[in-house]
Image 1 (cartoon, rainbow, N blue to C red):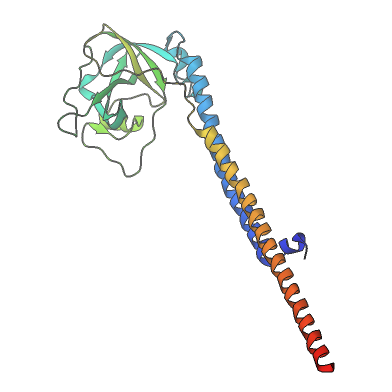
Image 2 (image 1 turned 180 degrees about the horizontal axis):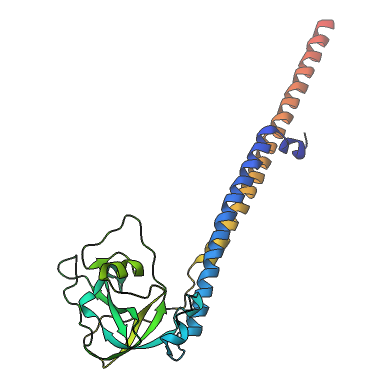
Length: 270
């Protein structure tokens, strides 16, 4: 039997179909990792393009008729007005520098009558794990704030927070809990305040331009799919060799039986 006919046996056709299914699954995982890598690259390029641009007025980028665009992420914006520190809110369970802590949100009332949430930065968890030991106060009176634009975060189903805290920077929740007409399109991550105060929460850093391991994971998943076919071919070859060797052995034994029979017949006639 040729190796092709051997491969067309029902069980080997079934194994090949299994290898095809395995390759499809691994390819889907590979494409998923490629998509995540593409998203990471787009975000890095956006950050590199926007991070060092000169601050623009809030109205220039977030006018009344303008909605949120991801192209605005990381843009610097300048606003003037006063903090509404009585509505300070903590975002819980925020990791940074190897610790878990809180981000400090303070509504900011601009001179134009808008209310914008400012993330003043990160503070570590205190002795009481449900709150920080110290929340550095925001400056009082007229303040000029420069911050980076970010969209609000979605709610996380099932995750709650105690009074004065939120699970995510969900701007509609902030508006509901404070009763303020908070702009729900975006918030600012603090870069600087004038006049400055000390101490301040830990401010936003320039992110490291790292796309992560998604590209290597993509190649690994595609390689796994190819290895499935290689394994099928190797097992098929070994099985074919085993059966071919067995057939030859059986053939040799049959020849011996024939020789024995011929000798028996010769002895009977002599």
